[in-house]
Length: 183
Ligand SMILES: [Fe+2]
Image (cartoon, rainbow, N blue to C red):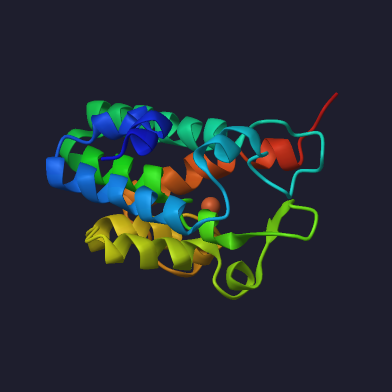
């Protein structure tokens, strides 16, 4: 695992299976190699372009928060539901870390050097490009399923428990930035 990826994602250490941890890290590594963005950009650019210009929360702050919420949710579900609804924590954490990895390929730099959505990202949104990167690194299908279904595309298929958790962790931390009741 490169130092850059290790620094970007301290949460990788939560994945107990060494092989899955390395495949998850490798996927981020090749995404960074192929992206116009670097690790420092990810700590600075806003996490979404869909919430207006006031949102300053960074890409990494949002992605890491989703992983933390997903992990806490999985632990609580295992604690309260046990074998009635088992959550595979390694699959959950790997999937949460990888959900938005494809976004690194969605960006292009415009003529002013600003990152904007490029043609590739328009044709292949990040759930698709994310699966492509992850499969290249040998990430198993149960994790790729989480990447594939974490956004609205996933509403069209049946999600695993782990994919439901990541989907909701992602949207519960996105929708209130986009639109919320303020009284
Ligand atoms: Fe996403």
